[in-house]
Image (cartoon, rainbow, N blue to C red; front, side, top):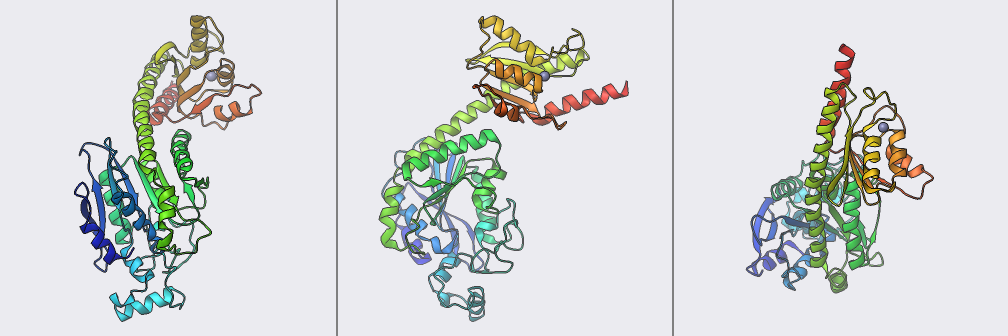
Length: 435
Ligand SMILES: [Zn+2]
């Protein structure tokens, strides 16, 4: 879809959709967001189309979705479509060079390697690949060192108007998920160096999209940098998917006659989004749930501190109830094994009349040591959420769990209220050294 067609389609949108201008290119083309607001207080899913010029069939795709009323059932969250992220690039890609000055036309030709066929053009009018211009490991994968039809990352992150406008708008909306449509290879990308728990949550959402579209998840993070998805995951800490909608058998750029096939594969988009929204709701609930028990463990750690013990507290939870809790008593009990985790496990086992704590979870302020990890694995605790990481170079609890001979594996999730927890331990040792 070209810019002129975009303007026409925008004028004929259903009244439930509001058109907003979120930025302008250097050549005065507008960057539009089409919003469907169910309720202003609700969260929003953001879509980005045509950030790569030659992939502008992704603009057609979202219009098709909107015009065929695919989103009508959605009533729990809002939607926003940045329907054409790179309008200047699309004018170049479609060969409409007359809309630029002679001086610029010459530059485009140079950036295009002297070729007069611009149909494979990806960049904007300054030869910047906009999906490499976001502030996420920016510049670590440079395919081109100068302005070019593709692969140039720009002079610095967000130095292009398009990326600046999209980032600003995204921050303001604060979405619960973003979907970026591209066209190469029927693939789904979701990861970018996120923490394990986020990885699992985002992967679950990606798998849902994989099932409904038939596209394959590609689990690579090292090759990507500076992308919108990368920025959303690393800076906004939200799930973000890059969905490549075009079959590799199709020649690029993908022609409009292939739109119906692409649309068919993506037509359960509303249900996929509802799934993602439910995951978001659950994680919001989980966050406050986890925090409640971690804070309880921290209050126990402070008791240990006051008793002149290394400040570590542990809480064991089952079915939302605290089963047992304890703090470190190594000094006062003359017992090398009296770590908070061990004491809590003993209490919990006694209470249940079983050495197996199946389905139980532990919240502990410090990463469990080797001894405690052994006890945790033997007690069959399902998940452990810990605060500060042990940084003395010893084997991590997670690694130990993986290497253990037991059939049972415990999930370890670290870094909960990490700063507060590590401050507590370090201030204890600082004070100790003074004495
Ligand atoms: Zn221990």
